[in-house]
Image (cartoon, rainbow, N blue to C red):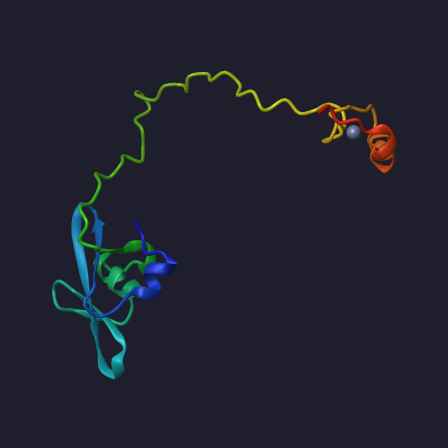
Length: 139
Ligand SMILES: [Zn+2]
């Protein structure tokens, strides 16, 4: 989870951002600070000027990209996080899928009107150019 550009623009005071770090759930509350600027207040009361510095504080001072660290808590139930890594022992080679047959491409240029196919595109051009004589749509 991360905060995408759209969510980022929508961040306003009153929102809560959450992050899970080393098995612990953290949250910051977005509040309005001096001059109407947003501040990010951690659960322990520390306030930061950016999600990155708040995230950095959570991480014990490590550099942090707050937009990647935090997620917008929209109040929706979280889907169970998917395991990112598959244990090597459990990893199975992907079953071989039969090659998906793509739509057969017309090997030859074909007149859309009458369906006649040509060996070369130039012949089709000629056919089209003289459609009144050569093109006989089956109707
Ligand atoms: Zn034709």
